[in-house]
Length: 119
Image (tube, rainbow, N blue to C red; front, side, top):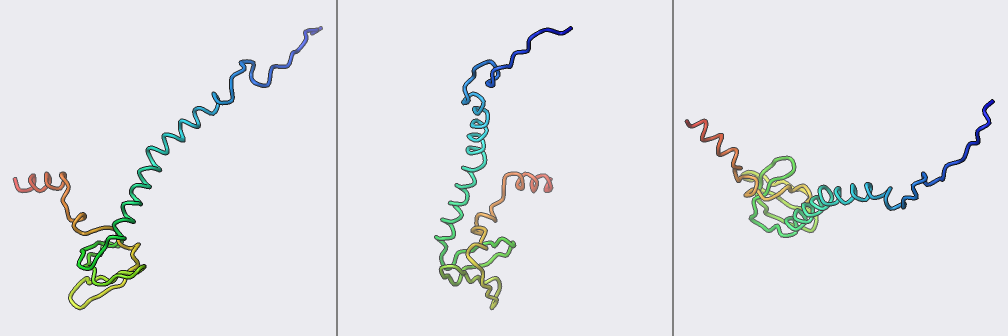
């Protein structure tokens, strides 16, 4: 009844395309992730590490918990902050988020909001 012959297809799909062509989208996605996510994060980490290494007595800093203080003591791993009169607290250096002078700078949006409230 059905006497037709079945032929097997070539394992490459018959087109003979190169393996590079099938991996090109994955490589492109990897490059995009590198430039949009990984590279900026590494730069940010390096900047933070540099800031921690350059801390000195008298610097006003903010911790990851939002506590403002003035550096009064430094060691290789720890930092001592004066947060109020006669109140000293000890932290690891990694607990410092940044310099308080940078955190206290108002952004452009906040300035616009203040002007709108004054009107």
